[in-house]
Structures are given as C-alpha cells and as structure tokens.
Image 1 (spheres, rainbow over the protein chains, first blue to last red):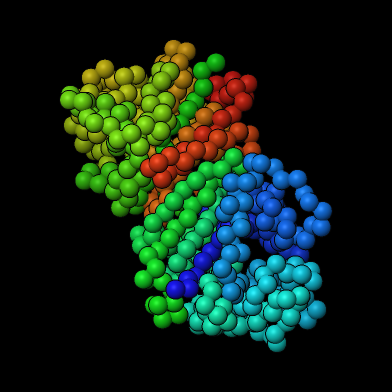
Image 2: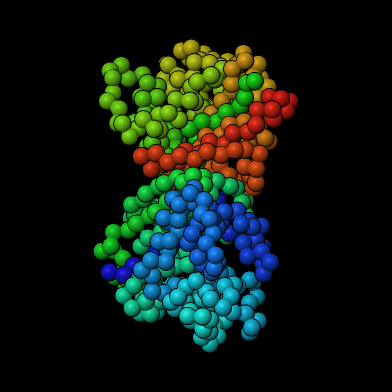
Length: 227
Length: 227
C-alpha cells in the first residue's frame, strides 16, 4: 500500500516551519538556516549538494541522518507548494527553474501547486508539473505518477498544513528545533487534535533537535480514503 | 547565587501550556490531564498527593522523575499567577484556599500575583502572599523570602511568559508533549529570539515527551540584573 509521507520538516518550538519574508536571497526568510542546522551536516544533504569529494561527516550527524535519508527511500513522486519551488513572484519569471540547479535531488516527478500553472519543466532527471488543484486531487495525480511507490508532501509548511487538515498524510516526520522564530509560516494552526489517529515516536539527537514521527494505521491511508 | 527557575512546564507541540476554558471542574480546561500524563506517574507527584501507601512506580517514569523532582530542590519561594491559584473568579470567594487541600506541596512562601490582593493565607506549612505587583518587583520580594535559595516561577503559562519576556528567568525547563491543543494559554507568543542567551539541553524520555532545559549564564542572573 503506497502512502503519503512528510519528512524532515523542521519547526521551531513555537511552530514555525519557515521564517517571515522569504526572498531569493533568503529562502527561509528571517529564519536563515537555523531550522536546517541539524540537516546540513548529514551525509544525505551533503550528497544532495553533489559534493564530489567525500565530506567528513560529524559522527553527531549520524543519528540525524537516519531520519534525513528516509525522505528519499521508496518515494515515487513529490508534491510541493509554490513557496517551495521559488521565491515570491517566481511565476512572473519564465526563466525560473527552481532552487536546485541542473541536478535537482528529486529523481521523480514533482507536482508544484500554484495558481499560475505553466507547461512541464524538465531539469536533470526531474520533471516539474504545475497544477492548480486542491490537495486531494493533486495527491491522486501524484499517486498515479509514483507507480506504486509513496508520495512525499515536500512542503513548505503551509502546504503540509493543508494536507494534514484534510487527513491526507499517513506519516509525518517533524524536527522540533529549540528556537523561537516568532513569525513566519506556521505549521500547526487549525489542527487541534490532529494527532489522535496517529502513533508517535520521539527521539532527541546529539544536535539538540527532537525527531517526532507520527504514523497512521495503514488501513486508513490517504490513498484508500479516496485520494 | 540564587536564581529564578521554571520547572515542569508542559506545553503542547503548538505551544499551549494549558487548555481553553479552565474551571473548577477542569483546572486545565479542554486539555484535561493530557499535558500532565508524563508527570502523574512520577514518584515526585505521587509523594505530592500525600499517598500514604507506596505506589508502584513505572520504571518508564524514572527518567521523567529526574526532571520532576528538581522542581523541589533548593527552592525557597514560589511565584504563581492568579490562574494557578484557583479557577476564574476565585477572588470573589473568600473561602477559596487553593487547589491543594490542607497540605500544599510548596513548603515555602508562595507569592500569588493578582489584581485583587487579600491578606496572607497559611495552609499547612505554606503561606500564600497575594500581590498586585509587576514581575520584577514580585521577584525581588520572593528572593528576599527565599533566604538565599532559588525562586520558582510556578506558572501558569501566561505568568511564565511575562517573566520570560522581561528576562527574569535563569533556568527554564519545559516539557514538550506531542499533542496539538489548538487553543488555550500560549507560552511562546512575543518571545522571538528569547533562546539566544541560553544554552539548551534536550532529552526524550520513554513517556514520549521531550524535556528541554534552557540555562542562562549565572553572571547574568535575574537577581543580579536588579530584581
């Protein structure tokens, strides 16, 4: 049974998944890299950046990497919000091809939710499809494209929140970073009691973050519920 | 050097330290005991309730108890908000003597911040003093009463938030419970960047909660800053 998964979504202690005022120069807004500091030293991220030489890996990052790499296992398609694909206004720039250079780390179809769709865009071995579709419809499209593998809801926080609110996420891995961002895009608004149908596992790693993994019983997966 | 400390303050993943609509029948409002489930099985809480017989302690509660009991070590006075002393409206009930029966677990002077002060109240070996004072002034009073020991800021969340906002807390122990309360009294509002002057340690325990301990350098303690 293929499922819908969220991985590596870092949130501050006050619930913000990215900072205020994201821009081309500051993709995470005033948060800078503070939500990502646990992720950047992991072998998974280092490999994503295409580092050719072997980067020495801090042993302290090993525990974080066990989580980081799951995001890339068994995933056949990704859904992302417009705010992940580019800075505010990228829709008006026909030359914008995403943040990831010529070798995006997706290696599978990506569905970008945007009110201003455009034609498909292939970069490296990734094809970006642009959709103006509600979450459930986008998820059905992504499951079809994933060919039996899972679908990753890739973010940002407001996109994940919409999928959570509609009960469309089977596995949610969030990383609680003990900082107070104060403003930005909030993950948890409007989700009172959301955790009820999920089992949760918690682990703190040497980097000081807490990995929380919420898992829903497979028989109630987003796909079987009609997505 | 005596310091101002907060212990055992449980918050939901979305930052609420107690639920909405607290009342005499539901001191934590719609949260019920969900923020306390890690604490109730600890020997520290069991002893507080004055259980005469030995209660069998779940070994899983041992890790939580290491944190729970620190709240009672080296403390010479407590400050609490009106909302911790009683349900909304207790100020109009001259017979209200707190939630804790005839043996309150404080064993030291308690300063209750309220806009409607009354005369001192002694219950068991605890004396409650009622103060209409801003945080810094209340803290100075409590330090004097603590006779060289530390002062505990006992809650609730809105009271702790006021002390945090004024830089009056030297040690903050919060317990992140992986639930989404959605509404209630929020701990983190208005505290962007508060963590900057603190070192933080994180530990997840078998109960599934995460203990975060923020510690400020002693030389900048709330007391030396003029409290």
